[in-house]
Image (cartoon, rainbow, N blue to C red):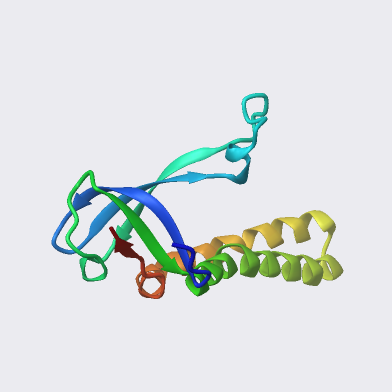
Length: 138
């Protein structure tokens, strides 16, 4: 399945409930596929649990191998909210406060701006979850 408009990962169904399906996927960094990963400490793999609405999946059972899909536009949106927007906020805060205060205070304030940013994201998590929908294909 090579759809450029879709991000797909293979996973195993962990549990099936009436209101959600949990799928365990293995998230690997780009380094984990490298031929030199045995000699390097940068390789990284971790397990992630993806929550899928049962309406976006067919009949699945725990232990079944499935493919979890997400629209590429949703992945780009997640990249923007998770990395690009916080970077812009830190950079702009650093630029603004470096002209008004000392470098140490400007640096501390530019990092402190991330606290309200991620707090707002946390408070809007249900609204954001509706924008990041996963589906399952067997």
